[in-house]
Amino acid sequence: MTMGHRALLLLICAATCTVPADAQLLRRLLPTRSLGTQYAGSIGLLSVSGMRHSPNGSIAAGLSFGHVPHSHGGSLNTWAMRFMYTPWRVDLNERWMLEPLQTGIFIAYTTGLDLSSHWPSHLEKGYYWWTPNFRQHLYLRTQLSYGTRAKTVQRIAAYFEVNTNDLYVYSWWPNRGAIRVYDILFFGTGVQVYFAPLKPKPREARTGTACLFHRKASSE
Amino acid sequence: MMMGSLCAGLLTACNKFEASPYATSVPEMPERVNLANIARLAANEPNDDDTVTIVFTGDPQRFYEEQEAIVDKANSIPNVDLFILAGDIADFGLAQEFLWVYERMERLNMPWLAVVGNHDLQANGALIFQQFFGPLDLSFTYKGYKFLFHDTNGREYGNNGSVPRLDWLAAQMDDPAPQHFIAVSHVPPFNGDFDPALVGPYTEQLGSDERTLLSLHGHSGSYVDGQFYGDHVRYIVSNAMHWPKFLLLRIHDGQVVAVEIDYRQ
Image (cartoon, rainbow over all chains, first blue to last red):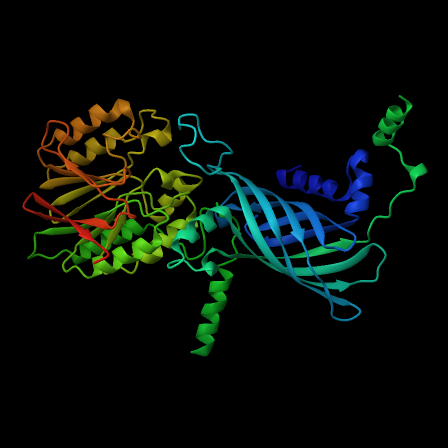
């Protein structure tokens, strides 16, 4: 099994299952699951992601794994944790829905080539102030969805995204006369498949370690 | 015409699809810019003018506004042979930063070269610098002056005795043809980021040949000019780019005149 396969498996797990202790909370707060794939967007030439969404779709969180091949300046691997806020939706008709603006942050951790997560010991502490391979990104997205009316797959969405990162903003801010905002914005595009929301499990049906833990706690 | 601009617009937009800020290649990234400029310099070499005029500054990282002003000022000075950037082209070692500096330097009407700085070696910067500019250590001869561009960022290699490459330097100086040598590197030997074990051998190597005229540096941020090792070698540190002055070096018959020029005027 290659690194890519392992990452994909982990992502699918993250998006679809959790340890039972957290499952009920996640089912309630973020019942909708989605899986996606993205081109570029600073988290790999190609990436796959799993996300969970709140009942009204306004809040989402997820994880992605992306790869940059040697031919595109790699080989690099990027894990990114993403938080997303969708302030409003526009129903275009029965089938089509537009989310004109989605925004949030993602934190990207990249490995490969000469990258390291810590500064070498021969540099004094604080010699360089930034983190070498963790980047914080801000992004804006526009997404168009098509409702399928199927039981499992609720809707299929395509989106376009612009993002920038902490070091680009830090470079741009004192150079606003020389570098345009457009110069620090980078694009990504992708598709996301939304699955039908999970229904809360009835109390008596709960099983697993979390329930065992609760039973034990209540008996004391 | 309209189709042309549309295609150019689309192409620019396509180049905005970033795979990773750490990728070692980005769309529109040039290759081996130093080597291209050495070729340009050789093509420009006149037969009737033996003065070498150099605009010398350093540390352009994250000072793009200042860089534009310096480029404009340098273009207004007649008969400049070469513009030298004394390292730290990027701050974080990201390809995009190299590209931002390159785009501005390409507005110069003279050849320009960059030497590697410690910030250029961050993240995947060492790989990017070599693709973008060429080898970290390189030499060329112009009007009888042999320029020795080399890496002196010893601390970045853990002061392990490998940088600067003394064997390379000695081999380059074992050359009877040039009338003079001009060393160009980022960290000066009197700075704490130079490998302390190599300060002696390095300065002795430069001073061992009467033909060594100058050792040009950046890194420490403000103009320094002097002879520090009891020999004839003159060490000059450039102002960093945020300082409103750069140096104009006029070299004729082994004599160097350094003048500070305010780029705001």
